[in-house]
View (cartoon, rainbow over the protein chains, first blue to last red):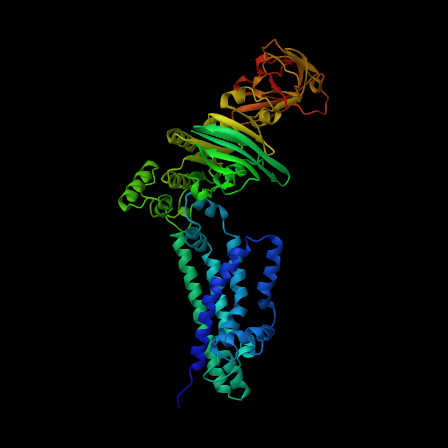
Length: 224
Length: 347
């Protein structure tokens, strides 16, 4: 019998794409939120962080409220052939929403501890703001940004609640590792569930080891 | 070639109100911490924006609230040495200095200027070091190198010695002073240290609570500070309220004495100042009986504190500072001050 590897592929694809999306969105909002007036910043901050504290099923519920095929936005998107419900890229949406606050919060923390005089001195030397952002601010904040990216990737990979609400479980179409574990467990396939649990453990371990290695190398580079 | 600054801005507890002109050479902004010195530099650099005013450098308007001109810092070509030097930690010395050379597109020319600056700043051999591996003095030289290759039209230094160990400070002062003299454009230096101001600058602008009190040639300022704030900042230890009683005579009620002055006393005198070095045992003028209070020893000098006979016992004592060899065996019964050494303070 041909073993169905689809959940692995689908999970990695969803986690990788969400991770990239969340990386840029998180950095964008972290950078611009820091410059907003305090009142606006407070409100935006609560809104952007909510998915982190809400139960993921509640996030999924809200996503269905907005993107459901009978909702205005869902109907509108359907005209372009885009449907977030019961599709694998709906999983990207669900995972991104849930993982976003992790990237946003850690990136914001990193930006806030950035020594602003570095940016100022770059400006007085005539360096463009884009150069300063990518070549001075980002490298100085890379610890936090890297940590946020990894957390976001791990969170996206393990996403279950919002994903199951929005895209459900269809073998070979929307199944991810976490929904597969639940499905197999529910249907008394304990061995199958254990297999996917081990796969998940292996991926998470590799990711964390990589991060630790990168951090160690970076510390060494700074010292040398 | 000159810098014209006239800026206003509400800053929490006080209002920044600074108006001055600076010519080629080093001008110091001297003032207590938090008086708006650094903020003034930031406005000139374009990092901060005043509420209103006008800033002009060598005929180019950098900022003008009425004409709605506010050049971004990138277009002002103003060198700014930050207090912590602001070297980019992720870059090597070489990369840091190349950041200042980004306008130079010719690769050979770029390399030549880099080499020249490394040599001038005695940084050869350190090209591939990161800022964290350098000493404070080396960091300062890298920061200056990065600014100088950028060919700024003026230079601003924010407390350039505060991040250095005391023993490094003096030799670096001489290095930096000579370099600034060669620079040949306007230099503004912010400091709260009167020694640094005296060592480095030709002119000093005294700032207090966001206001610019006086701008004078360095030696003139120390000889005649003119205001209480300037007297304190130039290190005058003895300041007491006083009133005019004659064209060359003042009364100091707190000390219960009258003093003859060499300078003519103007109306509106509020206080007098006497530098702690200027009391003298022999001087016959302004000689009054004194009583010893206590003393404090310094490495090479001693501070003897006393009160005048008519002075209230709970009022702050007067400071007399002299080198240890000159210290009298017995505390004198009376001390005099030459009338030329009485500072007349009007604000």
